[in-house]
Amino acid sequence: MANQIEALNAQFALADQLRFQTGENGLPRVQITNRLATAEVYLHGGHITAFQPQGSEPVLWMSPLAQFQHDKAIRGGVPIIWPWFGPHAIDKHKPQHGFARTMEWRVSATKALPDGSTQLQLQLNDTPVTHALWPHAFELSLSITVGTELNIELTSRNTGEKTFTAGGALHSYFAVGDVRKIHIDGLLGRHYIDQLDGNRIKQQSDAVYIREEVDRIYFDTEDTCTEGICAIFDAQLLRQIYIKRNGSHSTVVWNPWKDKARAMTDFPDDGYQQMVCIETANAVDDVRHLAPGETHTLSQIIGL
Ligand code: BG6
Image 1 (cartoon, rainbow, N blue to C red):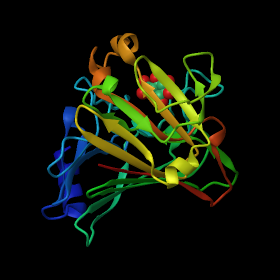
Image 2 (image 1 turned 30 degrees about the vertical axis):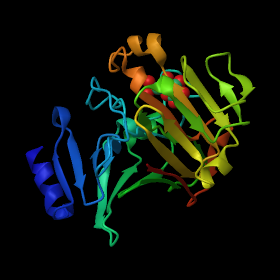
Image 3 (image 1 turned 90 degrees about the horizontal axis):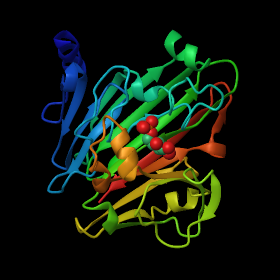
């Protein structure tokens, strides 16, 4: 491990901005600090576990009980969901939300940008392990830019010889003061699949308030993305988090509330009060069919 960290620092460290270090449970972690913000990224899952603009509170919620293990997804931050969203369509034994969040990603580049932000690029390619779960050749590139905003771009590319279909999500966990005192704008009038009510299709008739367990997939939300109007208004922390998205027509809103929180070993019983997930997704019919050589980019910019 010490050797791996040393080798990564020798090749990719950026003076005063980006260092590799041994993170929780010995997993390699990237620490980014510049004059605009700080962030942390684990190579396990290509997982952003912290983002904090200078002078602000953390934007992302991390579970204090998160498990940092090779075969598990980290709870909180921004899990990378790919190549399917939710349970596998046919085989329930395959991992929920795909495999990208439990694989170790490779560093491909780091860059100090002229505006003071820092960029980290990671990659994941198919291996015999991924072929056993999903029989396709692919290259996934993840570009993470840390500045006053956090810019995440996930590009999937078909490197094989037949078309594949992939879904996914940037499964962001946002930190809020008290989830009962927030509202989410940008989804008014949209239709959604209520995953807690037999997948019934419903229509959002107001801003989104979280007063109970919520697990919804909003569809046809691409215009809310490009106009950047999806936002969390937090009356307790007195702040607004905005999310601008591209390459996504579906948006997932999730809060496990009391019972589900209690049932999860990596989630504190009362943790549901300080978080909400708003996921920039390619879910349900919003999957992408990529012919050989084609690419698709799912991206999200988060800011205060
Ligand atoms: C959301 C799903 O995206 O992720 C929920 O809509 C799910 O149904 C949640 O419970 C968390 O999933 P996981 O696999 O990280 O526990």
